[in-house]
Length: 356
Image 1 (cartoon, rainbow, N blue to C red):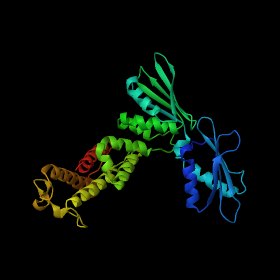
Image 2 (image 1 turned 120 degrees about the horizontal axis):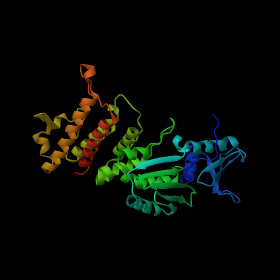
Image 3 (image 1 turned 45 degrees about the vertical axis):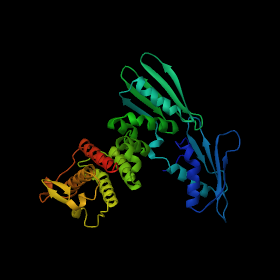
Image 4 (image 1 turned 180 degrees about the vertical axis):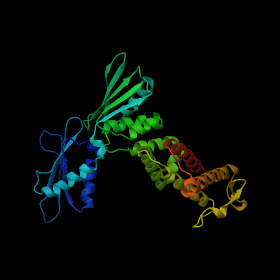
């Protein structure tokens, strides 16, 4: 299908970085990245490589925050189209659509602090557009990026209606409001789906949720663990109806395994290819650190954290990732609610481990 490069929901703040990234990746030379000549707002990129004509690409900034890419004006249209396609493909498929979200359970005293924090962004301006007995309407706009969203609070039903393009104002507002949302509300802002169109999952909002769950421990987790948990939460919330959800607990179990190995290494115990077995013994239906291993930890509180995490990891990993001799009797996770209960328990284990 032929692409339409007009009125795109392109992240204007990322255009220069994306341009430089593509040019570096492909070994091209950037001659200039400047404003478009004349009165039209936008950016002009001139680039190329030795032995061929240079390309000229204009990214025109349209009223409302959208952008139009023009690459036919330069001497090397084929090369210009490469940048046009690179920028086009940076847009998540669902972000070609307008936002039209409704969130429940909001009153003005809850919403005002969110608006105030959002308004602290240097490029954002918030205005109360109208107010009556039934509703209050705010316009959130960016003078720098020229996009805006409309936020309407219906006082009688305590519903919040968010409309506009998913650009800088939407990202800032949703980032700040996400801390107030329960899982159902978070799911709405993470996933926008209409008539079977592609899903969008915003990683920064998923990270905000994880920060709220993990507290101070979030800053201590390893980069690989953070990636696992963020990716896992995004996939969970974007998942369709499934007959089984076992595979979606894998990121949490792998994260617990990594955290356990790291903490045990800190106290002189390296978990090798044979696993945790040499450090634990099974007593009265649960796993406990053996005497030699327990003696290496400074106090009973620390050993309790290690033992609790290992028992959770061992129980869930064995139960979910091994089949029983009677295959159809094997354990499953049949619905999203059960999955999120297990995930929440896993997050608490991870929080405790990184709090040692």
